[in-house]
Image (cartoon, rainbow, N blue to C red; front, side, top):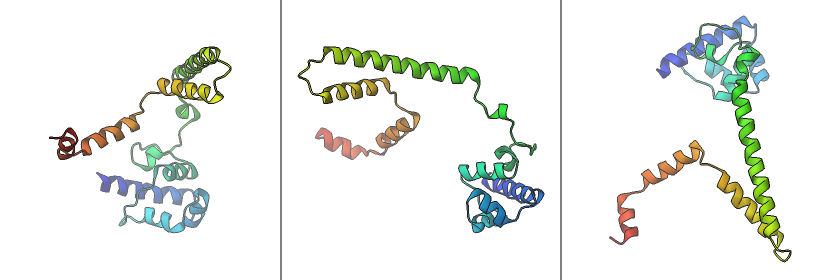
Amino acid sequence: MREDLASVFTERLVARIAKCNLTNAELARAINVSVAYIGQMCNPERGKLPSADVLVHLATALSTSCDYLLGLTDDPSPPTRDQLRLPRARVEAALEDVTSAAEHLRSALFEETSRASTERAPRDVDDAALDILLSLSTETPAAAARRLAGEQRRKPGKDNQANGT
């Protein structure tokens, strides 16, 4: 699969560079990479695929889409503004979540500061704010994956030693 992807990418990259009448040096300058890197991607024997950020810059500089360069579509036209926008409902839902969290934090901080005596150090309020923020946060998928990977790497022998068995 990777070989097919790399060969399609290389073929389409070379074709788009030619269509845009660019040299490898001009393209390299336009997307801030080395000419050698462009050469590696254009060499079918190397099968070099770019990182995601370079792919986006390539697609922009070559007036096409990432999907086209990767062979996911045969339409070389760049995406329209509407295709790049998030659906309004998703944006509104995210904004509502952020607003709700901010209101919860504001009210929790107000309650904490009104309960605090004048003798308490300001650091106590900062600690309370941090505790509130931590209670609002949820584990991200990346953090969950790291935690699970760490748990899976533990060896049974270590668990037994910790339990005293």
